[in-house]
Length: 309
Image (tube, rainbow, N blue to C red; front, side, top):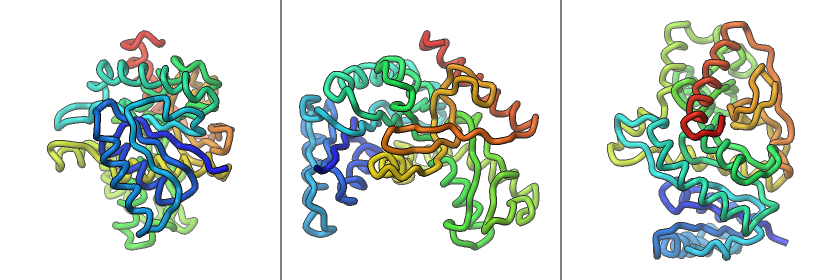
């Protein structure tokens, strides 16, 4: 029986996610939005790609949560996007109301699903989805480090003029200004990154990675990134649907790992059919540990605003 994936939100990120999943052919895709006609129009457009790509699975756009019933995975992309000069944290009050309502409806119609949250500020919104859903912690995770890692890998591959496939990086922490790229644990063809790139250039790449989303927002003027965020999200969905057991950096609830408690933060996680199946703990230096703790503290500050601390 074909799997069913629901994408909540038919904006740029949501529609791109829906398109990528539909074109892979492994699941029927339901794209939901509150704006009448928007998900239906985009859904029909994606469906008509079927004879060309090709794919034979169904793609439905809807305004009704009833159509999402019994989904295996629910991807939350709903919320307002960042504008120039706006931090992810500025989004919190508006987006927490949206994510709360969305999560309640997901739970009502797909009580056995796995939730993948994409809405910013990512870690706080993922924690909110977990809090509202009351799902086991393995069934709620946030797309964070997959995107951040992709940005870091891109910059490294461009600098060294090598294939991105040979670049492996480590990015921990919250999905935002306090993320923690770790060059020491990053490699190119197995060679430690610090041996290949001078420290000043490497520091510049780290800074550009941390500001990766803001750079695109400032260029676009009227929107935010969606091609890479959607690709990163679908990589997580793939690993869940196919039980791939990929080790991917995702935002998950830590309960003592890395010395962090009751907070969603990005760390390496084994992703399979049960969701976030295992947190991978790395041996960090005191400086790296301090940076990760600072990142978790930033998430906790948002939780206080949301009254979830």
